Length: 226
Image (cartoon, rainbow, N blue to C red; front, side):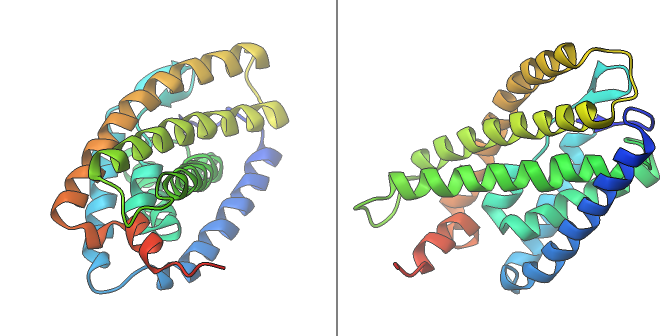
């Protein structure tokens, strides 16, 4: 969900701007452990794909639009830190070049979609993958698709709830918090279902042709039991 300028007050924008800068700085450092000569091109393709699907959006509240997020998809394919960078770059380009999302709201948008959406989506995928893989050498591709679907739905809903938290802290609109929370959750659960389907289909397509490029699968294979 893209926020325009003025949805939250200036102090709230500054606070979440600092959070976004710190989080993306950490991701820039940690992404070195996820990228190699094989995955760098995939990261570029993921960013381009997310950019394309995010350009299709529709209004939800005054100054707020809804669209697919791509956080779980990016994290599953290229890793959480690289995935967060991909989403952040997309949001920055959209804000500066296409006026999609406000400049002062860039910190809140990055926090919601590139940090919360990616972290929750990836954490969900890792937990479900570990549970489903117990006693098995690897998972069948359809099972991976189900995991990707669930991760995308939960990540999208949590990113929407992050917006509600920001609105509760410093919302500048006249809409009540209860109305905002109910509307954001309801619409983004529906968006999450669509995003889950796209995420599942994309992840399964990559897993069938190049399973070595799916970060979630590579991480599970190289993890050392405690």
